[in-house]
Length: 119
Image 1 (cartoon, rainbow, N blue to C red):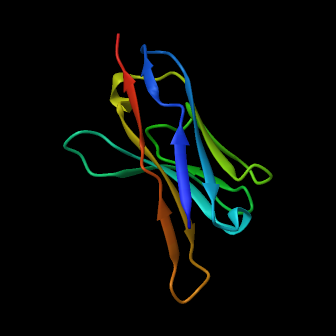
Image 2 (tube, one colour):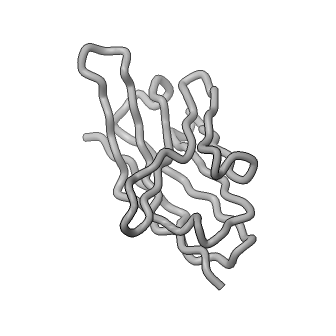
């Protein structure tokens, strides 16, 4: 059974930092591309950051320079370090695991963790 469990969300003041974690089980973690998405109220889910199996990274323009995605394959965990947070970063953040080198791509989601940036 595949599980992605996010943690680390919460309430933070503007300008503050948070680190999200996503612990994966039930998959061969090291071969998956891992991503963080977010969804604000009334908005569509958007891609925030991606890290490939080879640790290549990509970021949404809105978070580039403020957020850092990383992975620890020994711990089956992906992280999202979020700095210089603003109220516009308020959303539910979701972890995604994707492996597309098969005829039927494998795609899994976590349950989400709430991040609220407010004074």
